[in-house]
Picture: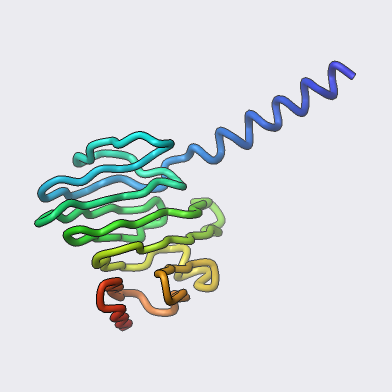
Amino acid sequence: MKNALFLICLSLIAMASDSTEIAGTVKTVKGQAYIERAGKHIPVSVGSSLYPFDRLISGPSSSVGVTLSDSTMLTAGPNSTIELNQYAFDRNTRAGRMDTSVKRGTVAIVSGQIAKANPEQVVFRTSTVTLGVRGTEFIIDVDAEIKSEK
């Protein structure tokens, strides 16, 4: 019984450590931005890590550029809020899943390896639209609900 409980605890620890893998890294910051993580506000600087379930918020006259581990590039414009609802990527198999919500503002996206290998596994959401990624570059503007795809 003790061995079974010990194995269950080890499994839970392993699952928890998988969910803390870095999803991406901040590459550029202009102005002020922060990450909301577990109820905390973390100022953003170049090199800051982004994790699954993080919320990235840019201030007025600000922008933030993030590169995710699958090479997806996200650039948030002024007064933008992006939530990384789900993100997982296996570099060996190129399998993964990305589910991102754009709550407000403008976000430019250049899709990475997940979208190239499994486009059905990449989803961007707004309050009124769910966008499945089939192209490589697109912009989401929540204020005007404009979507364009190349």
